[in-house]
Image: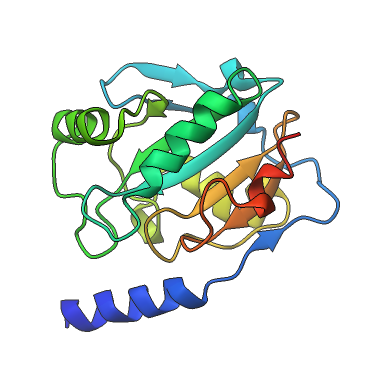
Length: 184
């Protein structure tokens, strides 16, 4: 049964579509009131992100999309000062990130030179999804979007005013113009 679920999720990821807000709305729940622990266990308050665009990505170390870490790091360097990338490791899809926070951190640094902020491993979908992903995928919190990631490396873009402006599925690479045109 687990294998069927994994295959279904992988197929769904291929057909997932972007969700983009045509007119950014002020969210009912304040993005900047959120907080989460970093991969090293330190609390991080999202109020520190005011005035910057934020790309939130659910990551995995053993996925076909894992090489996107390279483009995420490139993006982090190219848009430094304007964009903050937050990686959220998750084992939700195909059990493709089974390691501990320490193992994930070491893997990302050694294999992809990741210097952008990685957060504590957590769930990003379903009943167990973390508070950040609740905000990202519940219209009552973000104002318009109901799309959860359907696989690893789904991307959510928040503008410098704390408004969710887009969701990009796994197949959309980080440096795709669909994303980068919103970073200018």
